[in-house]
Image 1: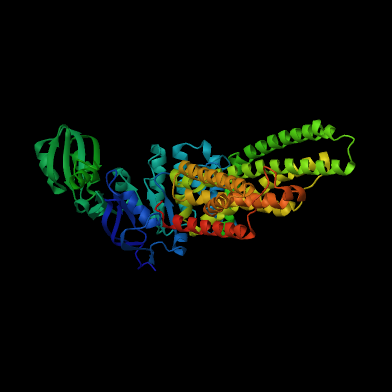
Image 2: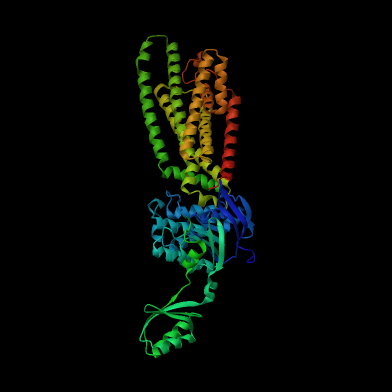
Length: 306
Length: 284
């Protein structure tokens, strides 16, 4: 039933003592969508995820996952979760750990064995399959935690800061996995304060600050698909520069870089040909992606989560 | 495979891997060695020579009473070791896993939180049983080999001691579902101390014919019935003579009724139910 939203919440609220960690969360996320949940530390991201996966009970409001009300036990067989503070049963080996969690998912042993081998390979821990988790580094634990979250080939997966313990290679791995999941039709709910991570993996992003949802936007719609490019170039005549208006607008110099905004990426090779045939020396043309960072600071404010 | 069984096995494996079983075994073996040496020295020592040449019947009675007294003293220590193990296992389990966060990837699986509690309970019950059997069996065997004596109603007594450790483990798990491991340890040993003192007040009260003291003892048994289970066990296993005289320091003078045993069972079930309830309600 692709028509049923993967996540639907209505005025979800959680109060701890006299502190409202999440004030009123209303969201609708479709199946197959990669959704970024962005906010400074202490904004209520983890509390929101914990309410959705059933670790904490909302003070008020309603929510459903894959069409079933929050806390439905059977639906949890189709949901994966990687918590923020990934601490696991470190007296188990990697394979035993995944076997335990696969069994808790209710998976059949034969299918599970195959799936475990597949996932250990995917997260790059094949060489550590029979080593205890107690010797694992922070990054390795995060990788095995991710494998754990994907064991059941979930329709919906919650990743709470999935790259916090990872080095750059590990981060790229996680990004690739998120992309694969999306292609397979899995809905990914990604909590992060790393903007670049969300920028390259998500379809939509929500900004949350002080427990309130401030803004939800589609990343593709930023700048209406337009791209700002920086061109490092020498030997340009003023006529050649004004000739660039065929492809772009807002043409200006920033140091030795010529900045211009084009309608889409395919304009870039054409600009390159144009410049070369007009005798200019082109050293570099780099498209600048939308600056989520600027948007974040603008939306959340400079004080962040303080 | 049922989630309860998966988690019980996990709990069991955890205790083995974390060397809890090994530590328990070493401690148990130490205890058995010391107990056996002590029994040997008393059995062959001066008391026997005191009655040398006396009537063979009297010698037999003295031998029986001595063996029974030492057996009960030994089992008192066994019951204590069992309680300590039960309290420690129960104290760390839920509190420790909530604190470290390992519980988060367990309870978000398609299982009930009650299954987590029952699975852990069953795993610990499976550990405590063989542990007590090893210690009590070793004590019994040591005495049997050295003096040929076996206490009466051995299995009833052991079952009651097992029930006592299960009760303490369940109370420990209940506290652990709400408080930290350290606070749980404090509460459980505090309760044990209360039961211990209450038990002795009742005993001494019975010897001195003080009805008030006996009632105070019964009241503490209602608050925590662990010690009364031990005293029922001791009553079952004591020799007929010391039962008549009421003189054994580890035996039972004021005997807890079977009603108290039934109360302890109900107490355990209620504590287990409450553990499930508290754990289900708790934000993790």
